[in-house]
Length: 332
Ligand SMILES: Nc1ncnc2c1ncn2[C@@H]1O[C@H](COP(=O)(O)OP(=O)(O)OP(=O)(O)O)[C@@H](O)[C@H]1O
Image (cartoon, rainbow, N blue to C red):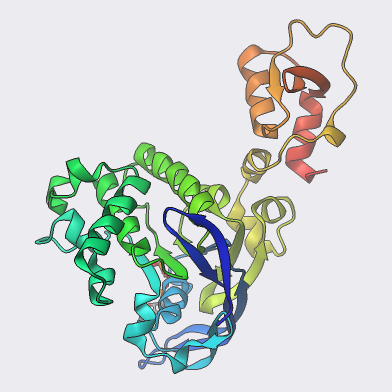
């Protein structure tokens, strides 16, 4: 199998590409949930599936771990056709995180996290070490939380245990179906940030389903926008999707505030800057690593018409409000 080694982090070192090749799903009652979808997810990439309710997102996700059998097409993990793999064994290699986590209520956090390693017959000591390591990785102290039961955790903590459990046997792929939607918006933002930090460390191939465009833009390396019947409307980076919607459907889906969203994913770069004006003492400063949104926010909170952009604390150029608004509209 084509398994690309990633960085050797605490949580493992392998990821595989996923290829959906003309997949179809027609349910027994005749519903054409997915008519024909082709999509490639690179090893170590985080791809978000987004689209209106009923467009087939969950069906696509569940075909990858064969909780649902496709009625046509092929799915490859690396270069291996998954229909040739025993579904139970396949699922042990694919982490799956769902909205309400599905932790086993009568098992401790530790036992929940060790589920797949136990099924794989790992020695007890190795399972214990692995569960401790994973809990630490998702920000839960094993000594404090390991012996608790799921009902003794907050929603956000349960979600983290779900992620730890999905990563336990070092899966080659992680599938996540609305993983953060059951928690309140503040916890959700924090979990998303932690999740990005975790992904930077473990570099899994991840397919994540969400309804939330902000979440898609924040998390996705690429976003696949689907319409009814699993039709692929656009498959692009967040910046490209917001900057150049490929169809009226996508334009409407990403909505009127896409300019603002686009600013958040537009990094400040030297070639967007104007020369420094004479007097810069009163202007707010934004580092070069920031986004165009950071620049606009600094202008709006200080009431100024421009910001000074700095690199290593030294001013390297300026950005005016008009220029920022231009970036939001065209991405130029
Ligand atoms: N077991 C089933 N039998 C018949 N139709 C089904 C079945 N499961 C799902 N569907 C239909 O397939 C289509 C796609 O459903 P799916 O759950 O994949 O959509 P979704 O995009 O994930 O929706 P949501 O965002 O609302 O969760 C829908 O029309 C749904 O009603």
